[in-house]
Image 1 (cartoon, rainbow over the protein chains, first blue to last red):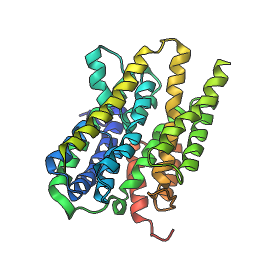
Image 2: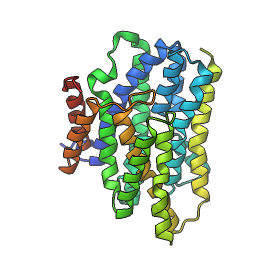
Image 3: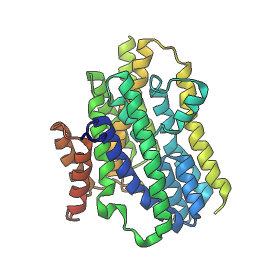
Amino acid sequence: MSCPVRSDPLRRDAASIAVATGIYAVSFGVLAVAAGFSVLQTCAMSLLTFTGASQFTFVSVVASGGGVAAGLPPALLLAARNGIYALSLREVLRGGRLRRAVDAHLVIDESTAMAHAQSEHPEKRRAFLLTGLGILLCWNLGTLAGALAGGAIADPGTLGLDAIFPAVFLALLVPQIRSRRALGAALLGAAIALALLPVAPAGVPVMAAALGSVPFLIRRRG
Amino acid sequence: MSWWAVLALCACAYALKYAGVVLAARTSPDGAARGSLELIVVPVIAALVVVQTLDGGDGTIVLDPRLPALLVAAVLIWRKAPIIVIVLAAGATAAGWPHVM
């Protein structure tokens, strides 16, 4: 008997990432409720904002007494990279106006990286949808569980959860290095992020790293 | 907590995603532009790896169990291990790493 998840590597990868994200979402639910958000507000954030780094930043600033006005700018700086992702997914986000409007909600780190890690077009779209929808489900279930359970759950760092995501993104980055210029852009992007990390506000190092592609774009056109 | 803040975050986060989709739809469909748009994301993902491994919060760089976990993952990626193996190995390495760094 064949298991649909095991026989399909794409589905298996998407499911592994979605489950890891779901476990991480539990700690978001705990943190948000502890910061003073209601269970309904916490769930609304995961369903409608649906971009983890922004949600964590927003809730952390509020938890540390910064207020919602102080929490919004860094959260939106982090969310801005999704715009860059959407731009890069031109070939994947095809279809009518409504279709694209729905797809836009699924544009996050993981769905973008999974799409670009595939080399053929139909697989890119499938990777994007499987990852985006899988995470949408797990992220919201995890948030609800965390919001209801409250402080009974351990810090993600102690479970090694915070180490999973850089490992996954490295795994999804490697297949995207298909040329010398992609390698150059990746190294320059990493260097920009490293240089800005100690001096720039949260969100800026990752956004600014997009500039790492510029010298390699110019060389190609010239 | 006020609902306006929650809904403002939701609305702005979606607007940023949708802006990218709209901009992408307006670019010309020729091969060179397509390749360029795809290249933009490569340094961003690379930056994500760096930041998520070294960010200690509040503008500090910290070396903690995330780094050995990333190195273990790098070896597994080189050996072409599936993502589920990478997820489990990275998590186990970080969770089991003595906090001495």
